Length: 451
Image 1: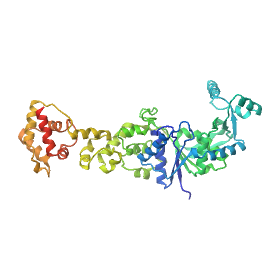
Image 2: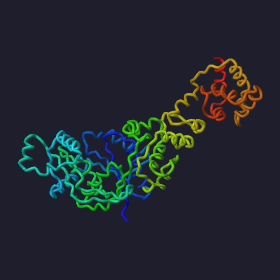
Image 3: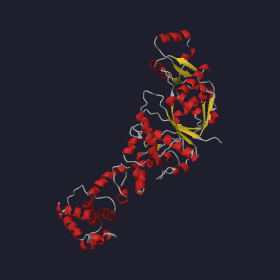
Image 4: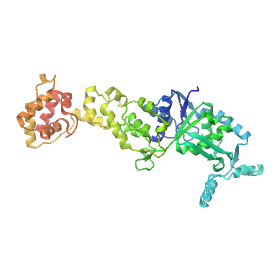
């Protein structure tokens, strides 16, 4: 049995966004479940817009997500292969030159739509004489080359959509070669998929019509389209059913990283989005790999909620050991296990950590009423001595305070919390007291009394 091979082919013309990440993740989960090969193919045929910093970011972001690749390829090193395919298609009569400008094509599309017709290329270039072609070239026009779609049925069984049918006569001949001679993604992708033995193509449903064209292109290049399995995933929308906002759509997942999200918070949501499975706070990709199935995905548009990601993120932070979190912290952040254990239940994102560290450092000042100052003075007097802190100083301190002041609940705890942290909410006081230690507590309560 042939090894299952999938590919993720991002273009380094911008940063990865949520839609890209979902495509990469679903390919990865399916591939790892079947012990296949994950190919990362950099689609950098657009030399003008492709940037090294975007390519580097692709590698960094996938590594952050835990999506590892087995092989890599770069399309800009394969122009010879695309030229060979181009020559083959020309000799077979499946590529023909066209000389319309973008403005002329836009006008034709506008006229077709005004007449209630689909915007389909009318094959004017197919009927040009040699003299007409020469005349265009004398004007300085360079041809772009279109693929001639055969007038026949195109069928495949989609792993998500089920049976899919297109009529070749209803498809517009696509441009495969630009005026500058550079191949369009459609051609480069098919050549690579065939030569790199890709078996499964998993992508968004916006590629369905493109798949119909590519099936004919696979045949025209002498390959068997039956060797390919296609899965077209419904595109995601925001929680209102609209397109993703710039922040979530095109701004890139590095924005979410900067907001203190753990990668598994995003992966847990994206992997289960649009399925009947519950979204859970798994701390690794393994359970998602084991449970992945195309049969679980609905055809309807799934709604992506950033609030859900935040909820999952908080759950992960509340349970994770420090060793699991350290890779996502700045190297300059000095955090020990005891501090982490005390603070983690109060974190919604890693962005919250610096503020809590500042609180632990004691950089705050709170004013108290005269009554609370008297209470804090009593609390300071009753603070267990430093030689009694090996066990549970908080329980002893709290019980003595209750007995001596008759305070309880918020009246007992709130002034102490404010004196120790500057906030009226936060970690359990028992953990906080042990973390701060005798000297810091004495200093902070004493400072609160003197304000």
